[in-house]
Length: 71
Image 1: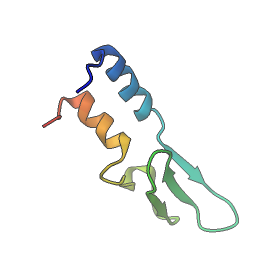
Image 2: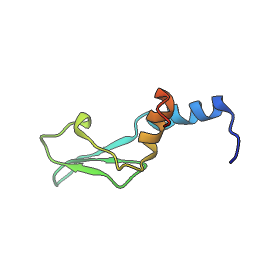
Image 3: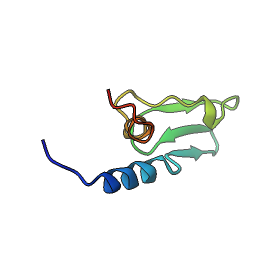
Image 4: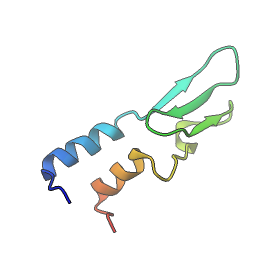
């Protein structure tokens, strides 16, 4: 397996976690979507806090790296 510089990995993880969600509001029902996975959340009643990423999303991987949850 390749060896990675720990600081580079942490920097990348932090960058991924900065604003991973986009919000679309137009003529139709507004929705949130992730820049990194195919997950979407449609509806007026939802906020970004209600969003769930796909299990293989880089955002979840970045969260695991930054919290030390790699097992």
